[in-house]
Image 1: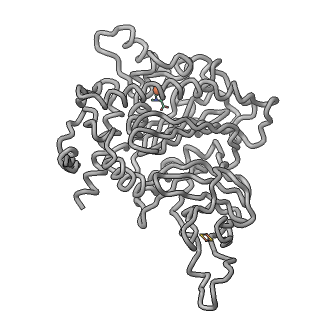
Image 2: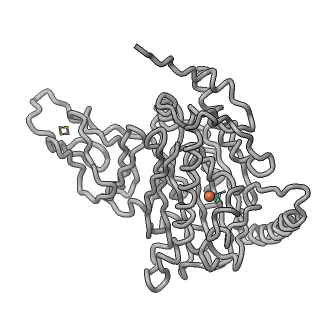
Image 3: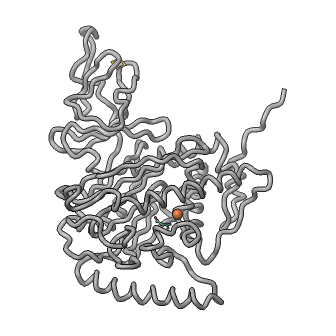
Amino acid sequence: MLTRAPLDVASLIAARRPGYTLAAPFYRSKEIFDLDLDVIFARHWIFVGVEPDVPEPGDVMKIDIGLNSILIVRDDDNEVRAFHNVCRHRGARIVTEEHSTVGKLVCPYHQWTYELTGDLVHATHMGDDFDAKCHGLKPVHLRSVSGLLYVCLAAEPPADFDSFAAEMEPRLAPFDLRNAKVVKELDLIEEGNWKLTMENNRECYHCAGNHPELGLSFNKYAVGFVPDADDLEGQAEAAAYAADVERQVQAWEANGFISRPFEELTGRPTGFRTERIVLGGEGESQTMDTKIACKKLMGAITERKLGGLHLWTQPNMWAHFMSDHAVTFTALPLDAEHTLVKTRWLVHKDAVEGVDYDVDHLASVWIATNDQDASLVKLAQCGTRSQAYEPGPYSPLTEGLVDAFATWYVERLSAHMGK
Ligand code: 3BY
Ligand code: FES
Ligand code: FE
């Protein structure tokens, strides 16, 4: 009988060449996928959504992270909580719909009933000795950073989340995300490993050749794109962009909008990067006409031309916050070769559809861009299946941030395996 030797993951990690893509098994093997679910997705802070996903008491959002199903619930005191979506009776899934509104959480199997605080309040036929107090829903660590929701499935979540939150809260405050509303949500299944989804997002080397719609407003020089030394046109463009940034960042900061870059993508569990990007064209928003798509601006903002505050967090999110709307992305691994990308578009909660905004105008750039990215991720995944695939070099000029992602990932696996 033919048996396959178990993968030597430690040797694969040790063999990773800095500056190069990962070896094929990191994108394909079930064993490494399971390791990713455990080491990355069950021990780090995972971006799951936004407070406006559960705007009212009783609103529930279900989100699956690998084999763990999580409920995000707004309780009657307006507190947002997270629980495992696992009944304490015989373990059934309590909620199966992605979005619902309930008075209490009732398990469909034998109707055990839980308060929105997770307490078990009703369970029939369990005898006199049964202690309901010991059978509440299991809580999951949840943090909200100005309305951005992160969960951690570990017993002891990484403590460096505090410094991430402290850095981002003043930057995000003007958008008042807690008082925004989700006006469109889109799920896209990419045919690739979650790390290829993330790597693709961390560079704009591919933008010029693939993203005509995004390219109208998104300047590739904003995210680490450095032209070749002999590319005189590129050098001039990069210099013009840098001068524009210098001028606009000064003006934004003078008005209280923190804009300077901050980057600690590696060397910590909760790696992240942020900066306020100068947008192209009219410079207002990531739309087809580069103007705002929502007349009622976010929070109390009055300046349309606020660029795009971008945020990336390891391992699974990216987002852009503009004067008129925000767009957030959540990558969730489905299996070794499939990844769910959830996109949400948010505007001020008092904005009126058809009066202040039109969803097509708001969402068309990223709908097109997501499709283009999904095709690219699929092509990259296909390549990793070939016998000819070997780790290839990241561009030192334009893919430093992709390398930072791969380096962070290898660091996290090494830290875990070294324990
Ligand atoms: O969403 C981002 O962060 C951008 C858009 C294009 C590629 N990526 C760097
Ligand atoms: Fe939930 Fe029985 S499994 S009530
Ligand atoms: Fe892209």
